[in-house]
Length: 161
Image (cartoon, rainbow, N blue to C red; front, side, top):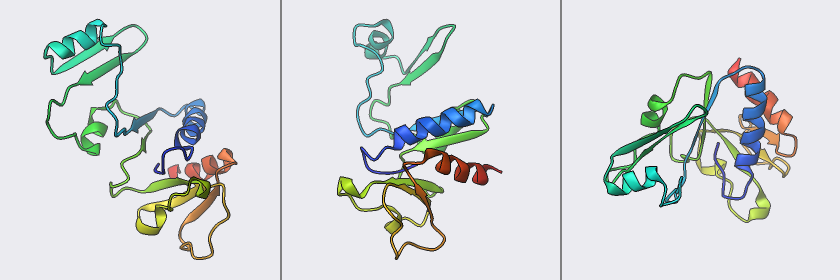
């Protein structure tokens, strides 16, 4: 899933993941961020150990686990490297990674004043928007109503079958 910041990607994704998980599907999500992500306060043990030089720190509890890896100047791992680290799932959804040559759903709100991404990305196979389909949109491009997330879910379900 791709789209400009503030377009509603996470809100739509939250609805889709919730509905798919309620169906019994195991769904993984990879969310890309351009920011320096802070997962714990600097004074906590895991942050202190990373600061001390640990390459990776796993924080494990009976409820969840998190692995934090410091890249320390190394290149950012590829999307496929991230996918390979995840546990098996019925579906892995990706938010971000606009540049990857994978099928994408764009969340597009013209009111943001940003250009539609589908115009320059042949890998965008559907657009969820709060605007009407433009007359010049490719016929092969699915145009979905962003304000009806169950319509987007129905489209996604057809892609999963």
